Amino acid sequence: MYMTDPIADMLTRIRNASQAGLKYVVIPASGQKIEVTKILEAEGFVRGFRLVRDGRQGNIKIALKYTTTGRPVIQGLRRASSPGRRVYMSIEKLSRRHALGIAVVSTSKGMMSDVAAKNQHVGGEVLAYVW
Image (spheres, rainbow, N blue to C red):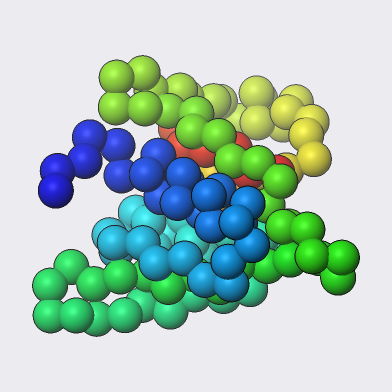
C-alpha cells in the first residue's frame, strides 16, 4: 500500500490507539518514523518502543503511556509540515514558541525536539506538534 504522508499516518495510528486505551500500537518502520519515536520516548510521551524485524520493512511496536488515572499522556498530535506544504522555523521562532508540548524538528544535525534544536542553535522543518 502506497502512502503519500507516512508521518501523518504514524501520528494518526498513535492518536487512535491512545484514545482507544490500547497498550501498544504497531506501525510500519522507516528511518524517519524511528527517529520520531525516539524523540517521543526521550520526551516522556511513550513508555518505549521495539523494532520488530519481519524480513521486509519491519514494524515499530510502541508502548503507549498513561497517567495513574488512565488518561493518555499524549493529549494531542498534529502534523505541521506535509508533502505539499513544508513548514520551517528559524532558531528565533523556535525560541519564542511557548507551548505545553514539543515540536519535532528535522534539522541539518538530525531530527530532534524544538528544545534540543534551540540548545544546538539550529532551525529546520517542523514535522509535528505533540502535547
